[in-house]
Image 1 (tube, rainbow, N blue to C red):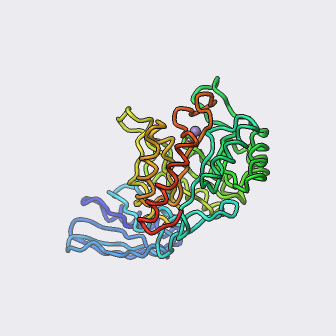
Image 2 (image 1 turned 180 degrees about the vertical axis):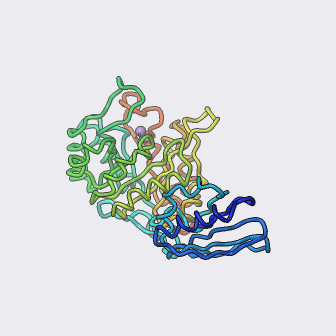
Image 3 (image 1 turned 90 degrees about the vertical axis):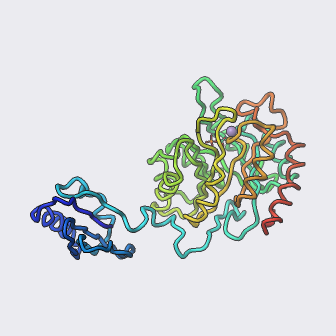
Length: 358
Ligand code: PEP
Ligand code: MN
């Protein structure tokens, strides 16, 4: 961290900043220019890489854990103009020297050098027969993981809210029959123990990406977490939310781009495919794409799926329904089984073109 003082900062103000830094048991190095003092705060994992040059600058390098200081209101101290962090705010999600990680979802690896994975199923678990039937269909087409919501985040409180534990039980039954591991959404910390009894992966949905209590709770779970990008969240916000989960000890986090809100209204959301290479460059976590919720229109889900794979997604999450007109949620965007089945060989071709298997 570098602390830059105002040109008119007094010696007393500079001394106070340095004292404050030293109160945390950190060490300070000071360099001076004609008009400004720059205080560099150096942590073990964040060595000051580049000292501002020029005769008019003064640098005070402070040695110690940077995070200790960042939380304190140094920025508002008299004489301080700006604080520039040197190291990244996210420590555990950062790519650094690590290669890409893969996360096991019930034995199916997602990310790293592994094959591209298809995750599919209905938006909601609606009945035992419905989830069993769709699980069989998507497995036959090539899906490796089954999705289905038992706790549904709905815009209206009068819409179908999910079958709760019954839905989880039906998902587990579908897994027992097909062998497909199960991903399902968690909305409330109070539901964690019941979901853990049945699921292989916890999904944190777009509306809860910054529900920090929920993030911390799933961070203490033994299950991997599929974290969907908030529809108004930046890429940095998404990484910081992942950091919440990682910092509680759960290293099995998968990031999901699912569309963001923009000025465009022709599609349900705008699929931000730039998130895929950007997240891959910034983090070591697996990155998957949900084209279904992004475009929200069944007709165009195949095109967006192909584009997402070309962009480097480690997995795709695609909703499929055998009678979408009767679906209790997201029927408009669910692929018909035949369309999904025809799409899979095209996805394989795109995966092969970028040197991956599916
Ligand atoms: C879902 O996967 O069905 C869902 C509700 O997703 P999102 O949180 O991205 O809207
Ligand atoms: Mn849905």
